[in-house]
Length: 130
Image (cartoon, rainbow, N blue to C red; front, side, top):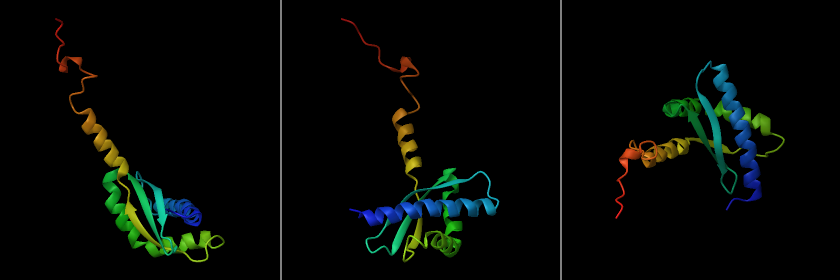
């Protein structure tokens, strides 16, 4: 159960980390990749924050994660500058790729299947009238 303080800090970090990452991607000249921060969870002692990023297209997820981890300290510094009036101590940031959207679409495809009886009623067994 998250405390209100954890939720507030997570919200502040989510907004600021997303802004910093977007600016960094723009400055690096990266085109065609959209990164959004879907969730931030903060430990009870407020020392560690897990940052979950959704990357589109999802094939670029691992590459973006690798690049974010390479500039982790710069991101932390920039976020600390933005939050210095709200946070006494900047938590350590850990980054993860949030692939839940990809997972959901995979499930949808599996449920729909290639042979969709709604689109092709011929697939359904004919009901016999007695």
